[in-house]
Structure formats: C-alpha cells, structure tokens
Image (cartoon, rainbow, N blue to C red; front, side, top):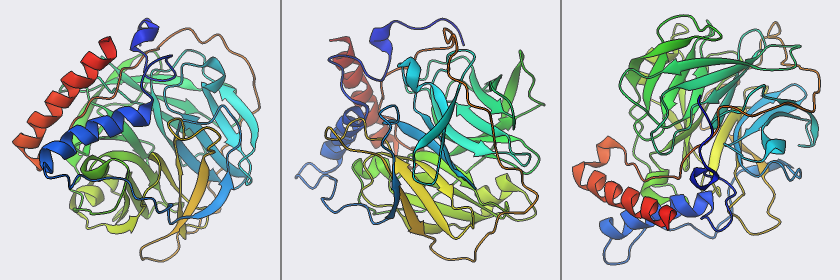
Length: 372
C-alpha cells in the first residue's frame, strides 16, 4: 500500500494530537450546532450501555478494538490502525477476554476495521479504513486455519476512494465491503489473488431506517456503518452504527439482495463509547459488541456486551463449520503499508445538500486543526 506517511499524518496515538473519539465528537458538534442553533444539539447520555457485560478486556494493547468475531473458544479481535507495533496483531481471546495468542502481519496494514470468518474457518481482516479518502487501494487479509501469517489481497474501487469500516463474507467466500457514511456495497469483480489488485464493483446500497437512539456522536452516529457480522448458520446478517444494530434475513443465500431489499429488525445499542464491532454469539441468540476506549478516562477497559436480539429465532452454528485456529507467533518485521489520516466529517447523502455543506466545513476545520 505504499510507503508510510509521516507520523504527523497518522491518526492514532500522536503526542499533542486529538484522540479519535474527540475528533469524531468535534465533527458531530459542528454539525449539531448548525442543525440545532438554539442549543438542542445531540449529546451523549450519562446512562450506561444497556448490554449485559460478558467479559472485560484487560490487555493494554487492546484499546482501539474495531473488529470482533466470536468463536467456540472465545473471540478474535483487531485494533483500528494502531501505530504501535505491539498492537498490530490478530488477537485471539478466551471466554474471559484474556489474550491467549497473537498473530502479526507480514507487512504493516493501513487501517484494519472489521473481521469475519469464512465457511472454511479462515479469518478475514478488512483493511479498508480511509478517513481522509486518500488510499489508491484497500485490502483484505486472510488467515487460514493453521497458518502463522495472514495473506494480503488488494482491491481498488471503481469510483474513487471510500472510507469503510464494515465487511461481510458471503457463503461462497466473497467479501462485501460496506462504506461508512452511505452504506454502499462493493464486492470483487474477479477472484482475489495475492500480489494482484482486483477491481471492486458497486453491487448495491443499503437504506437504513431512521433512528433516535442516544449515542456520543448524535445524528452522525446513527448513520455511520461501523461493523457487520453474519449469523453462524448464514441465515442472518447485521450491520451496526454507533447507535443501533440492523439485522436482515438472508434469502436464498444472497447477502447483497437481502441487504438492499430487506426490512431489518433493529436492536438499539445506546451510548456505547465508540462502538465499531459486532458479532453474533455462537448459538446465534444474541449480539455481542465492544467499543474502542482510547478516548475514555484513564483506566477504562473495553467490555464485551451482550444484547438480546430484537426478534427472530436462534441461529445455531452449523456443526461442519471449522473453528478458526492458528499457532501463536510473536514477531514480524512490519515495515510496509502504513499511514492513515484524521477523521473528517462526512454525512450520509440522505441528510441533504445543506448538511453536506456543513460537513465540508467541518472537514476544513479538522484539517486546519491538524496542521496546527
């Protein structure tokens, strides 16, 4: 993905730089002031999240969790674009959220945002984040069962860069990328090949219902798609925002058609600090989420939360689905494919041209603040 950008352009962990949640909140505040000049701006509620705690992540390397899948043995998680070498791993956790092994990347990823598990147990990592819309390619990493390094597969959009934080993998092992602020679906137009760049094709767009769920980022938080997951038997998929989870029934194994034409069931995920991860429990009866905590008070630990599904029956794991497993590894020379930008404010097209104008002003403000 090209040479690393200077550290001043990196998004996470810069001395003197605004924390990730603070930049999102600042952008949301700019929009809120424009929308609610009398002071009725959306603001986070002091009420804690309504999910039931499942376990707490206590490893200091995991403060920016952006993707999670549940397994029979616990969880697999990734960080969001961490510059710290120790955090650039695929982390395997037990049921108590303790790290039991890690797998490094053979070269440095750009901005890892979501996880999925294929039908053969392969772990898929979506390296698709692009906050300042500057990437020429995006990628997925595939970690087959028993492998000690993931393999990189590059892709390119047909219509310019997009920021995307959600990915699904279909029953025929085809990744579907969901853009963050417009929920446009992209999928490879040919088979993925290591060392090659495969064009993506636009295959649809999801129309999410309106929401009023309280969240730290107000109206933006209700429209930004930050994660996705597939039920263990493949019969349901879910997209999440900072505020809600939208669950769709999958008809005839066609994920794209189900997302673009189906009516979702909604599960509120209120007031999570920065919710970017979602997965189904292994029995398919509930949703599990976890938030980034890098912008929270010192000592705050990520907690995996369990939510009862809005409706619909359980989706048990098929018995012939392999469990993702890899041997533990500890070191790698990760020198490539680095760099990501600050978080600009981009608003879903459905909000209207006026709000888009406000978002552009916010982008300018954030970039000027970064340069200062």
